[in-house]
Length: 295
Image (cartoon, rainbow, N blue to C red; front, side):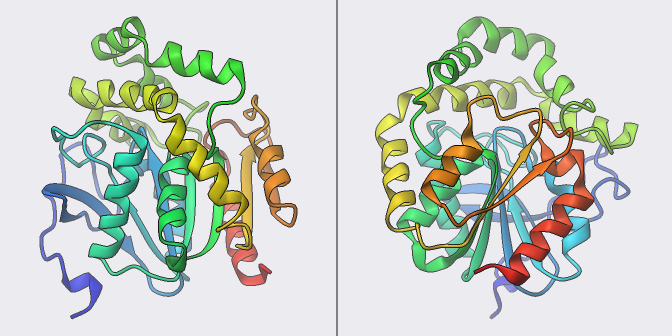
């Protein structure tokens, strides 16, 4: 039995998620008792795309481009995208453990991890526990260490605060702002922007995002373990860092360079927090070139 024969179920496509904006099969796997929506496209070397906080729709333009040469897998964590909210505690380590179970469920091996935002500490946790599964790391506007910079701690505390959480739960301001050209929407149609916001019609996913931001402050021991793993277990892996020119206020790309001096670096011109959405062609081309020539 192949890994794609494990799960026969597919999720009914929501009315707001047309095939013109998401031309991929929506699959489901039961992981730790929860139905997990995921996408599995293409053939060839495996890229595992990991984002946590919003949902996998933000990878759509990248999947469309690289699936012709690679196999691409991405997922929605519980309470995000097309995966229903469960009663588990929201946190980076819990999501990392779920990711590991998902990877084992699909028998994914020899993978290149591409991690964005809070997908960084979630994905690096998988790599640290199971280094034999990972052959390369692509870090996209992310980090994988405790919030050493005071300004970062202040931002996380603000974003996870009750007033901001309550305001977003009521107004849905953050997903709407993220769907703009300064977030994921630079190359999206109006239909695509509406699709991105689609799952956030329910307040649960909005609250989950802010709880996850708060876990960055609460899980310092977990994050410290990731920092050690980057400097030891994972330090010989080929690494590519990709950041938006306008969105690295805490110097994450430079810190990755300190940890991985041989890392390849890409700065997306005029890019913001979602560089893969700001210039999907440049992002895809450079990632594929890096994969072909990496040391």
